[in-house]
Image (cartoon, rainbow, N blue to C red; front, side, top):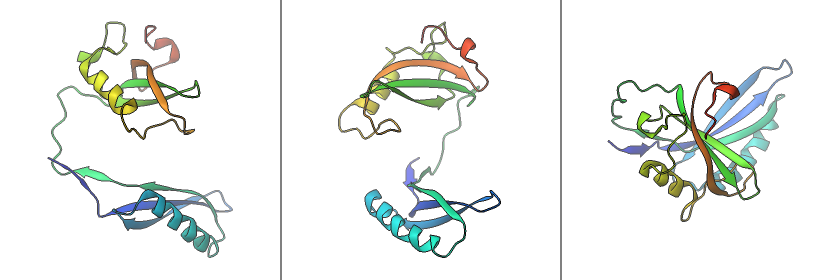
Length: 165
């Protein structure tokens, strides 16, 4: 088993026409291309494409993809609807979050919170905020600490979430 990169990264351009319909254009760049170089090239090509289209370019995204060559079977009983929510404090005193699907039951406290002392949770915190990290909030601010972690389900309401997060 190994994560192997695809041969190219994808630049996906989003378009909107007068009827409100949306479309995409995908352009590939070699995988070894640095992100800053690919973005600079995207800025050039989007102007050229926009000159050829009556639609409006809404923006674009850059994706470098790796796929597992031989994925292991999921653990019995795992459900992606059962999520572990990790909420992080940022340097500008705001928060950002991401979820991990099919959170392991062994990490859950009786009230639905996630055990911050579990070695795997500590390893995640170190990966997110330790060393030469590159992770941040959508506004660009640095992630500084884990604020709360708790279990939720796809249809969880605010009232049904754990009180002790």
